[in-house]
Length: 492
Image 1 (cartoon, rainbow, N blue to C red):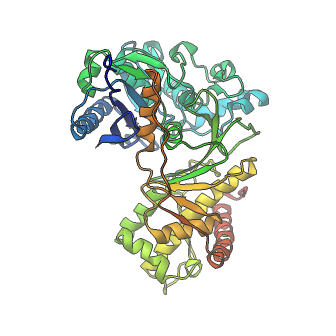
Image 2: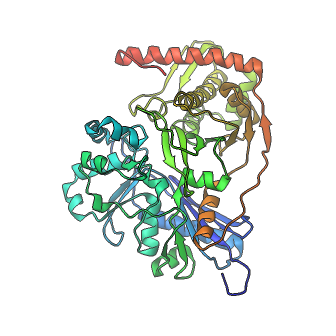
Image 3: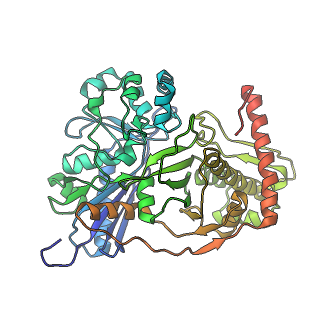
């Protein structure tokens, strides 16, 4: 901040899975300019999800340039980072890329997941998360086993936003919200798990130091200044994983719940304590605040599955949602299981696949559209039930995300989940959370957002009853499909 002057804006950056978003945020917490730019995941082998991290630098530069331009190009006091979680970047000492980064949709680390069986049950419980292949620890172990030479060259194994900070500031660090999402973090001790590192044969020296999310974790160097369009020496906050940043940006507190629907879906409940359970199917991660955790049910196939159905049937989004007006609840007995990319909560199965059941000659596109929307809503209901089964009681529920705009879809979700939904237009909460961390890193506090809901959707009792019946049939159809293909299934 200039001596004797008003505070300057801060820059928040969200390095997402498919795009980067950036925003210039003033001292009142108001976004003065925003920008975005895409980058693309590569799939070079079955199950692979990779990217050359240098592509991130290009999208970060484009997004920040657009944000600066829209804001009138003010100088900024600090930079804050948020980023996609679970990915692992393989870097040399100065951030040089040694191989493509592996990202959370990658399913190739199944064998590495088996190494967690070596852990004592108490140690396994302290990891506080289900063992799934698309997380940092298993992917790091898998890559080192595939490529022995990589281990001899590797200096840093970093989450995506931590690699970005290394390239901007020449400082290696991480923070608890991303560290706790690696399957290498002891939630109870709030530190790296020596036992997990040993079980996976991972060298502790490749993991970066851990600092607070709002800590000052470096200053922009010359190369970083070119990428970001800010002055050299600008402080950079440690930042947070994208979900923790979104919680921070939205001002969510313990006792509330947020359902976010995009390509996937997340059901997030902030917690004061981690609430550990044995054999969890939902996740526990640290928040971006000095204390606090959150529980999360992660649904891989939401808008992703609906987009696939829309493309296969050749219908618009409006036509997809219009099926909720023209087709009766339960879709005339047609069920759709949207597991096109496997599924996390509650199935924890990278190999499960989608299915349709109950089709007859009389059925048309609208019937299939309604079945698809109901199937995705039932996956979300499974996520809520999984949280409840682990002792998490989701409280007042916000509905956010790019995939929730149609009121007919909102009504179906409220009825299926059996709870009122406060609909918010919260489209920039992740980048706003990064900006709030940037301000804290330089001794300032941005005001907490005060955003009233656009509407509150109450569940219609009759539709809720219909969805209860349809959900039971949907589960039965899944049981039959899985039994036929595998011989058995454990239902939750």
